[in-house]
Image (cartoon, rainbow, N blue to C red; front, side):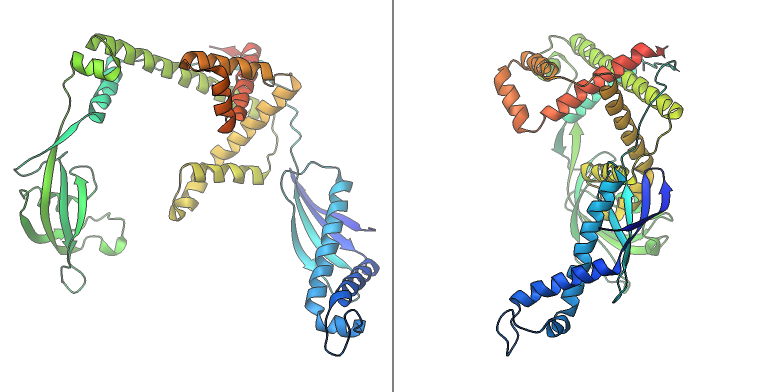
Length: 412
């Protein structure tokens, strides 16, 4: 196609092109569409394929116009993208289509191209490794968390207090002052699940009792229409339970992990926290190196790639629709940094020949199988079925890239 292509805007990895298809090519495409409709159209008084072209044009004008535009845009798009000799980062978008009888067809083509990441400077940086100390308080906090997970809840007969679990029938008056039938709620008192005034009312009751009294809604209540209002509230306490933590003794230690003593359990917890602190410190060093490389080697990233990363976050965290806008505004910068990090890893893996090999993957699976005490072949088949092999390959590639970077730079 003899197209006229004008570059209207170039901004980093984005291109905006003005494309014009000559009028004679538009006419040829339109005639082709007319012939196609004429060959199959059934019009009263005419055998199939024998209706006059003028009648076909009139009867199927809108469809012929749409087919002409779509076919021309598709052909023009293929030619433009091929002529530009670029690697696309996302599916291009067509905007501002103009098509008039006897005139050229014009449209704007918005392209995002893959960035050309060179990374001329990847060494000579100095970063600090900060290792979080494992304190006695941290060990105790972890053990307390284990006890919380194995806590039991027992019914109480008296009035509940903070940290007790209650089941209540709760209702507040409507605008007319009428208190409807209550709804059942299960709450942990003191956990902020109910407004303070309602919790105070609950704690005046014993199981089976009902109370009704005015309660003031907080000044900072999320629903602005309810702020500072005082309304009658009726509460019936169905039951109350109190939490009991297991005793920290040798029996508990054996239940957790077959440890002979509480001291052995503490040692194991301390070792786990130390290993976690080491992993956090290593991740922090990696991120600092990435930040140094980004600062020394500026490059653009396609907005569509950042959007894809943001969408992955939204999916992973199951963000409700009402909260998505706030979430995106908060985490978009993090998504862009992750895209840059991935590009740096990919660039160095290719340039320095650091990509994980099949042998690397086999070795890692053999190591995992030995650690888990399972058959290597079965584990490989399981990981392959679950689509985890790519994940292992990526992890190994990142390890090799960051090992290479650590050798090129100084970590204090």
